Length: 331
Image (cartoon, rainbow, N blue to C red; front, side, top):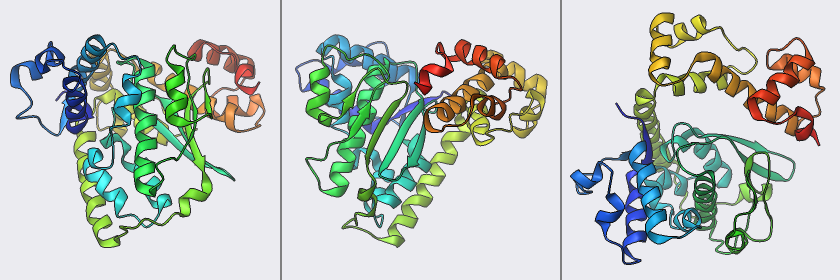
């Protein structure tokens, strides 16, 4: 089965955005499977290659550099389908965040990996890894502005502003970021982050309904299980390695965990254009980056936690993995 990327309702919103500017639907769908089948029989999700092509076509047609921001602001609770319904029936925002971190892959590419942390005064969502198929700016813009729009709708706070950190230089349309998010926007960050005050977690939601929430969550769990069953072996590997933090297995062990022989596992990864060591290094880099940014652990300790006995070897490996020296993150 093909990998999936975006919920179908997101594609319908993109089509409406482009058509409302006077462009023909056929121009937007050109080069995708939807050009042949149309949207009448659109399934629940859209294949990744089609989503990438649709976004590229939309950029060319509209010439809108802030396309991601504008699309994200159209993604409201209704656009999030069953997960959006589950959000509305939660007791408070804290419960919403618990649901979101469990089921966000219903709304995003399987290659997106988010981490959620509650500090003394902030709730922080960090994009540890993101899909590479679309421009980084588009993905960050769409995701973060959609989060902002969803929070505003849930909390009934149309003027809510968030702190946003973006892992790229300020684009030419940076002024639109400030219009959308407020003044607390920061470019050239190491990782993408969005955060809001911790006090918001206790905000009660007006449509709270525990029985309905349970029903919606059961459906979310079923849909996620279906999606994960379609994942490529590389995505299954990344998901498992992230759970096994500090216990990085050898390739034959991990193949066994996925009920595959080492030979079959290696062949499947080769067909997907990657290797186990590449995936292992990606996850070790993610974990090391989090330790470097969020803790004051000595470098020797961090090296040990990600599988190195020597700090100097870890420094060289981290530079190779990320293009940055560990001290740059500590600075």
